[in-house]
Amino acid sequence: MGSLLEQNPEFALPDSNQQAVDVTNPAVIDWIMGIIDKIVDIFPDSDTFHIGADEFIDFRQIEKYPYLVEKTRGKYGNKASGLEFYYDYVNKLTEHLQKKGKQVRIWNDGFLRKDLQSLVPLNKNVEICYWTNWDKGMAEVKEWLTKGYTLINFCDNDLYYVLGEEAGYSYPTAEKLEREGKIQKFSGQQYLNQEEMKAVRGTYFSIWADNAAVKAVSEILDDLSKVLPEFMKIYGENDE
Image 1 (cartoon, rainbow, N blue to C red):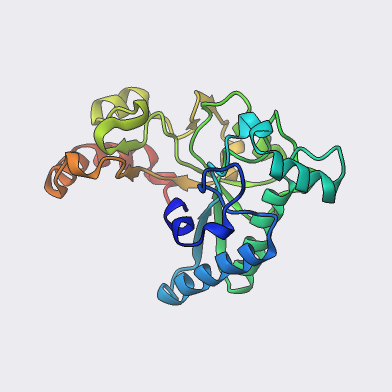
Image 2 (cartoon, rainbow, N blue to C red):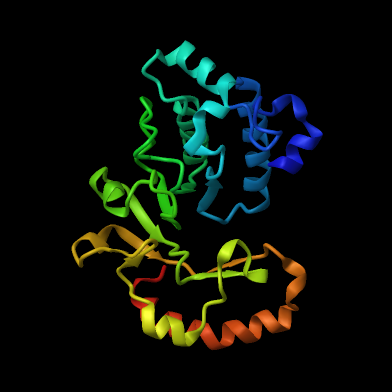
């Protein structure tokens, strides 16, 4: 998003160092929908569209975004948390994509938070890619289930292969997965029972190119050839 906003600085959310779009601006939403439409045209056979929607702002410090808070409370009233425009933005993108026949996915960390409740509800039809629970303000897995959402497990504790081992991650190994991997386990040592697992579509093993230069493709494939068989042994029956 930062790269896009370098070319379109007028669409940036004030106070965000040009890293987030101004979700209060209808022209911004039209701009993003135009980009989405172009992507949909490139991949016409895909029935799923992941819009991300995570790391929009520092959710723990909403006071650092006075423009967003002021605009939000001007529309939704003084009880608004400041995230209502953000929820509405995600809902609009979701509805737009649903009309094109796409199942929409988002990351979990900005929604249903314990510390920032939105007066605008999140669309119930999005699939929640639950990847992390590092921040105490994030909603727990069972909160999503209580609200009736479908989950996909992206457990960052066990299933994140981050090039360069950035952000404190270490490369997953077959030995670690054999020892710690569990199909019912979500980030932050959260576990679901068999009945709760019915709301989970599957499990993902993620590869992130945070520092793409540290390994050649052949090295990455060699690493994966060792760890993915163990992944499939543990998660295969619930893998989409």
